[in-house]
Image 1 (tube, rainbow, N blue to C red):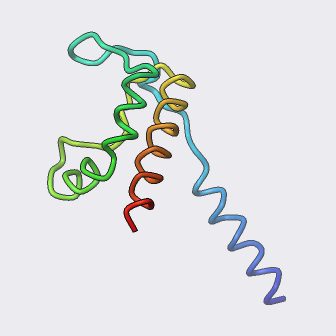
Image 2 (image 1 turned 180 degrees about the vertical axis):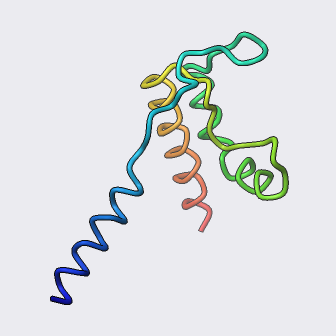
Image 3 (image 1 turned 60 degrees about the vertical axis):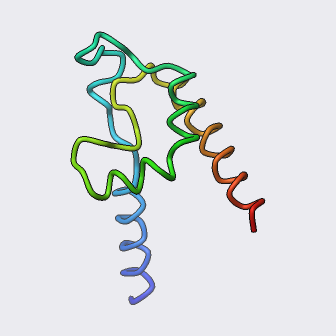
Amino acid sequence: MFKVYCLIGIALFLIGCAAGFNPSLGIPDIDNNVAGFWMGLWHGIIIPITWIVSLFTDNVSIYEAHNSGGWYDLGFILGLGTSVRSGSKAM
C-alpha cells in the first residue's frame, strides 16, 4: 500500500510541474514587442545575472512572457546551454 501512495505522490508532483498555457503568447508587451529567437538567446545567456537580480526585485524575471513561442524557447535553451557550458569550463 505504501508503494501505491508513493506512486500517487510522484504522479501528482510530476503533474504539478507540467507547463501550462501562456496567455501572453504572441501578444505584444507595452512597447508593442514580442520576443523572438534572438531575444530568447540573449535571455538564456544572461540568466545567471538575471536570476540573482530577480531574487531581490519583483519587476525582473528570467523568462519573457510576451514571446513568439517555440522560436523564443529554442533561443532560450541554446543561450542557457551556452551560459551553463561556459560556467563549467571555468572550473
